[in-house]
Length: 168
Image (cartoon, rainbow, N blue to C red; front, side, top):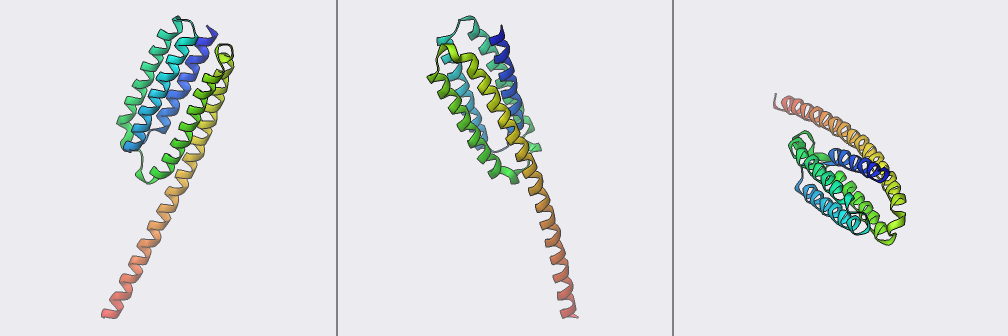
C-alpha cells in the first residue's frame, strides 16, 4: 500500500509539473510525446520487477496523466511566444534528469525501489523550483520588453517632431 501511495504522489507531482511546463510550440509537443514514451518504458520495467497487481494501477495513472497533457493543448494561447527559447532550454534540462532517473532504476534492482522513489520525488521538487525561477525570469523579460517599446515610441515621436520643424 505504501508503495502505491508513494507512486501516486509522484504521478501527481509529474502531472502538475507538466501542466506548468506546457508551451504552444510544436517542439515542446514532441518532447511531451517523448516523455510519455519514457514513462511507458518505466512502467514496463516496473512490471518485470514487481508484483502484477501494480501494473494495472500504473496503467490507470498513466491514462490520467495523458488526459492532463491533452487538456493542456487548449491553454496554449494563454502563453507568450517571446519566452520560447528560454523555456526550451529548461525542457531539455528536465528531460535529461528524467533519463537519469530511469538509468538509476535499471542499475538498482528490486530492493532499492522504495529508495529510488524518494529520490525521484526530490528531483521533481527541484524541477518545480526551477520552474519558479523561470517564471521570475519571464516577468523580467516582459518588463524589459515593455520599457524597450516605451523608449522606442518616445524616440519615434521625437524624430517626428524634429522632421516637422525641418519642413516648416
